[in-house]
Each structure stands twice: as structure tokens, then as C-alpha cells.
Image 1 (cartoon, rainbow over the protein chains, first blue to last red):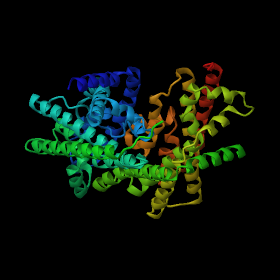
Image 2: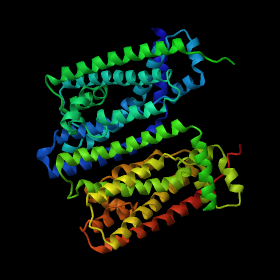
Image 3: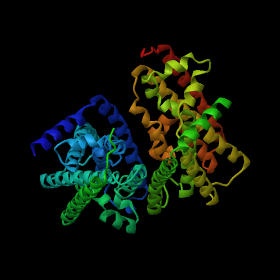
Image 4: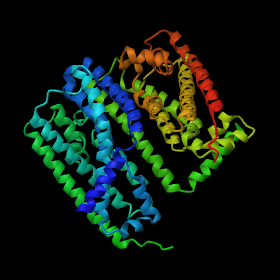
Length: 267
Length: 257
């Protein structure tokens, strides 16, 4: 356990590096969030009656989306890991007295957490400075905030479970690029990156909410905005837990099967 | 131009070596770009219209931006990879060759995947035109072509700025993404939708509205025909871009490796 913990700390530090890059990225994310909100504002001002969430909930969603981007964005692959499977460098990792799945999982968790921690405070600060319906929601009860944190942790597990599943898949494929791109596109659509899930047509929305992608940013962000409330919270979080378990178990089994077949060419 | 085509052929050949990978990534890009417009479709289906624009009209608007960025990228991808070129001191080699610097950087790198985006732009424009987005006249068709060509010019200028700044910072500035990748994203809606502040910023500072919002008003019969003359004006933007590039080249000192 201790070795995983120290590995976690190591990768967390790595995620916390590149502070200047994060600062530079900040302005991009701020502009991106602003433009996004301006668009929804235009729709909201013209047709408030057809708006499926409160404007405040939506604004919170957008700002938190920017703040957590590096945590849940599926396309933040660690190309190193994928390359190591292709080139055979993975052999060096296998020599270590650690379970490969556990090690990579810890690595992904830590890096995503570190990167997000770096970008989170400034975006949250800026978002909360913006006036009422367009800024980050500030009146939030401690209980809901606690649930939000818990759900965000579950999101991290689901995301890393999904990413690990795809990494494990690279043991079975020669070119994982296509699968990655398709998964990214699916996550964009069904995860609520393109439009928040309430804006999807009813049928697609149901599918999305039940899919593993709907167990990612969708849940914590909408809990924070007050869009998922009451009895819906435990249901949504239960689904998150379910998908985290399925993805982790599936990824682990897939990797084991892959490793059993893997033959590293010597040289 | 002949030089450019030669480079193009070389890059096509090298990409074709990995055929499956190439087609898969083309397909993926198409999927992602399509996704982006799917969002617009969902919102429009729910709300009916935005700022008086209908879905086919927005598709036309997006097609213009998509075509313009893709065209610019076909030619200017080398600028996008410029931080790498600088760091690996490939620029030294470029400097000693007896050809124009800009022309050579253009030829450095090509991403054929942008071809899929170009294809999407054509398909969307075709759909928008069939759905009757615009009551066409000869003048309007000319303005439409101008929007795309001059748009490519403006984006080219933005890439040039990006590369020029690399002379000073030696690494890519993520901030420029706001105007390159970002503009492609926001460009799915006419810039007027974002409110007056954004519209004026994109008219006066970075003239993206001159190739999108204003001429679009003329195309859709929402404004006077004079708006159709604005796209060429946007090319004035290239002057400061080139000046900055010159300044950057003069500032360049080899890494010496």
C-alpha cells in the first residue's frame, strides 16, 4: 500500500508542475466559459420558458466544467503509457514489484487530481466574481457541498476507470488511436461536454444519463448547481458507483488477459 | 506554388504509409467536428431559432468558418508546429535556404486530417443551400466565396502571430488558441449573437466578424449590400501580422545546437 501511496504523491507533484502553463491556460478557459455562457444567455433571453435548467445552474455548470476540465477530459491521455505498450517499453514497468493495473490507475488518479487542483482555485474565484445569474452559484448548503465533493471523487474514479479500460485495450490492438478518438467523441456527446445533458432530446438524454459517460462530469456539476436535487442525488451517485466498479473490474480483467498474451520481443 | 505541391505530395505519401491509422483519424476528426454542430442542432430544435437565425443559416455560417480555418490550416500548419521547429533548430536550416521564409515554413508540416474538416464544410454548405438558407444572387455567391477566402487569410494571419510570438517565448502560447481553435468553435454562431461587446472586439481588433457576421447580414437580407464588401477589408489585418513576423525573425538567435 505504501508504495502505491508514494507513487501517488510522486505523480501528484508532477501534476502540480507547469504552473505558468496553467496560468496561461487560465485565460483560455475563462474566455471559453464566457463565450459559452453568452450563447446560452442569448437563448435564455429569447425563450426563457423552453430553458431546461435554471440560468444560475447552467452558469455554475459551465464554470465548474472549465475548472475541472483537466480532471474529467477523456482526451488528456497519457500517451507515454500507450506508446510504452506499442514499443515494448512496458516490459520495464512489468519488472517492478507492483501490479501494473494498480500502478497505472494510481498514476492516472494522481495526475488528473494534481492538474485539476492547480487550475481549480483561480477559475472558481473568477467564476464567483461574476454577477448573479451568470456566475458560479455561491449559496450552497454544506450538505449539498459535501455530496458534490463525494460525487466529484466518484467522477474521478469513473473517468480513470474508463481511461484504464482503454489503456488495457491497447494490449489487444495494434493501433489504439481510432478507439481513443471514438471514445472521446462519445464522451463529448453523452457526457455533457457539448451541451449539458438536460439540453439533449429526451430519448438521447435517457441513454446518456444511464451510460458511463453520464456518470462523469454530469453528476457533480449538476448537483452543485442544484439541478440534481433531493432523491435524484442518491440515484445518480449510485449509478456512478456502479459504473466505477464495472469499468475498474472490466479494465483489470482485460489487462490481465492482455498481459497473459503479451510477448515482449527481446533485444 | 509548384514547390508547395511537391511538399504536399511528399506529405500525402508519408501519411499513406499508415493507411488504417490515417483513415481512422480522418473519421474521428469528422465525428468530433460533427459532434460540435450536433450541439447547435439540439439547441435549435429546442428553441426554434436564435437571434432570428434558423438552423440552415447557422449551418452556412459554420461552414464558412470551418472552410476558412481548414484552408488556412492546410497552408499554415507549419506555423502551428513552430515551437517544435524552433526548439529543434530546424529554423536554422530554413534560414540558409534561398527561398522565402514564410513559404518554407508553410511547407514544413501538413496535417491531412484537416481535409476531413474541409469535406464537412462542403457538405454542410450544400445542405444549407438545399434547405434554402439564402436567396442566391450572383453578388451573394461572390460574397460567400470572399468570406471563405478572406477568412482563410485572417486565420493565416493569426497563425503567423502565433509563430512570431514563439521567437520571443520559445514555446507555444495556449492563449492563441482562443483565436484559432476557439474562433472555429464560437464561429458556429454569428458573432452578433454573443452580444455587442464581443461583436465590436471581433470587428475592430481581430477582424473575424468582417468575414462572418457582417457579410452574413447581407447574405441573409438582414443588412445593406455594403456589408458584402467588408471581407477584403479584413485582409488589412495581415499587415501587422507580417510586421510582427519580421520583428520576430530579426530577434531570432539560434540555439546553436
